[in-house]
Each structure stands twice: as structure tokens, then as C-alpha cells.
Image (tube, rainbow over all chains, first blue to last red; front, side, top):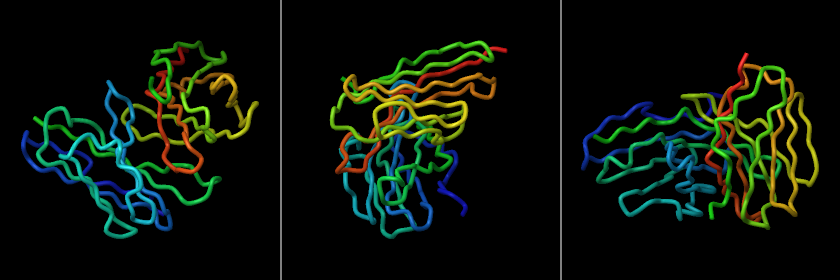
Length: 115
Length: 112
């Protein structure tokens, strides 16, 4: 298996632009998570899905952020409009169902820089 | 109060010594506890998980859980330079949900 695949690896954009981050989870995994990592705030959970349904989006910073999972093999995280404080590494992770399957498999992350 | 707290470090340990990393959590109902290792510029990877009070050993790593004190620790024996990384403590704060909350991580440096 190729693991969790994220794109792009790096994104540089200007303030006010729309940014779309993409994620392909591991085949057969029922859960998909979006995290954001900064030096100041560490690794923060933004939202997670179970069977393509958003379960908890309480970590989404504000209305500028939205996430979708149209099918079991694809998810997007969109920021519109982007701001410099959104600069961070965004990780997607997936896991299988079951208590003994709580291991998260992380993608390589997207380094976002908003100028 | 943050849900999962760790000392940010850096923690410097001589090669061959025992490194001790600590973590506290706020939700007394938490059931699942994890340690992830993250090398600089890389993504986190799971190295240990523990569900029950007491110790769990895997090679040079030992995870310790004390639910009464809401405390989780990771011991690394015979520390190697390759152990230099950031160690993230993670908790599932509610057994009926599935979200995993991470601490800010402790940066560990093993000096030769």
C-alpha cells in the first residue's frame, strides 16, 4: 500500500487566495483526520470523518476553513480566503475501525505558506 | 487547561542513558494513550500504545500509565543518537468517540 497520500507537498500563496489541500487515505480505512502543526500550537485536530461523514469539526478555526470527503478515497481541506496566520504544516491521517486499530497513519504533510 | 500537556524540552540525555518523557491529560475518562515519534521535517509515527494501568515494554521502549494520576510516561533505555526527535503524547479523550488529541511534544536530544 502507498500509504496516505497528500498533495501538494508545498504551497505558497498570497493572502486572500483560495487554497485546497488534498488527501487520499489508505484503502479500507474508515477514519480520516486533518491536523495542523505549528511551533506555537503543536499538532491540532481540525476535523475528522468516519465513513465519509464529518463527526467532529470543533477544531476548525473559523468559517474560512471547510473540509469535504465525497468518497472513501478522497478528502479536501479548503481555506478561503487564506491569511498569513494559516501558515503551517497540514497533515492528513487515516486509521481503521476497532479499538485495537487506533494507530494513525500520517501523510507526508502539506507545508503551507501564506504571504 | 490543555487536554494533553507535555514539557516542550529540549531534553538532553547522554548516549546509553535512560530518557524519560512525561505527559499529563485532563479527561479522566480517557481510555487510550499513545506515543508518537516525529523526526524533523517528517510526519509522526506510532511507537507505543497503552490502555491499562502499569507498564508496557517493547524493545528499548517502556510506556507507563497511571490513570489515577492522569499521567503517561515513556522511557527509552540505552538511548541512541537516532532517538533524537520530538515525542508526541496522544490521547483518545472519550472511548465513545474516535478523535486523538496530541500534546505539543517534547524535543529529545541524545548527545554522543
